[in-house]
Amino acid sequence: MASKSREFKCVCFFSMMLMLLITMAGCGFYSFSGSMAPHLKTIAIPLFENRTAEFNIAEDMTDAVVAAFNQDNTLKIAERGNADVLIEGSIVQLDDRAGAFDQTETVQDMKVYVTVQLKCTDQTKRETLWQERLTHFGSYDPGAGPEGRKDGIVEAIEKVSQDVLNKTVANW
Image (tube, rainbow, N blue to C red; front, side, top):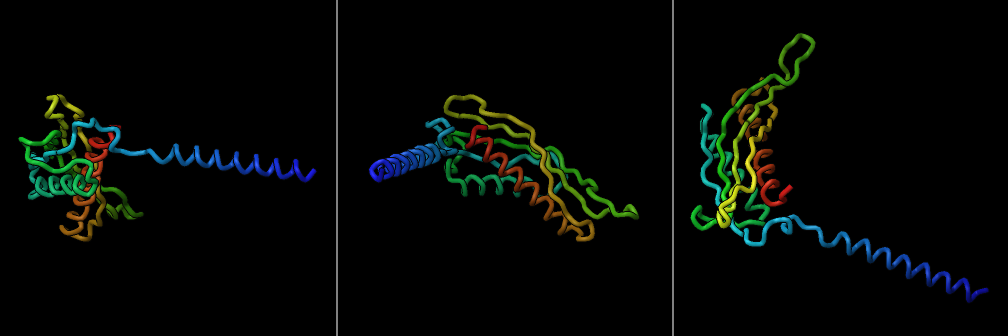
């Protein structure tokens, strides 16, 4: 009887080890960079065009997108003529809208919406990888003045930059 019990424990142990090994092997090979074409190694991000009246927004947007790609490090930043991928963008709209009111109908929260038209091109194969119009918002306290609004714009720009990164390297 003891022999069967020992045999059963060994079978259970090996079964659990096999299941653990299969589970770990299935999780160990997940990667965003694997979804990109292998010939895409560098990216150029020229200064975004500003079609709004907002001062410095094109520079801020371009800097945020470049920073997102630098942090991710899947594609290396390069000059436009030497890059495999090109991201071109235009900031086409900036809107402030009331987000929340209190009982006296006083605005408690504002949202600033930033809309960007983007195009991502594989310069090696001369084909468009994706093209899209993105809108993201940032929130701010209307009582905080111009600095609060600037914080809302920074939040919206950060959301756009992360979306651009994901659409480019994750190939969703």
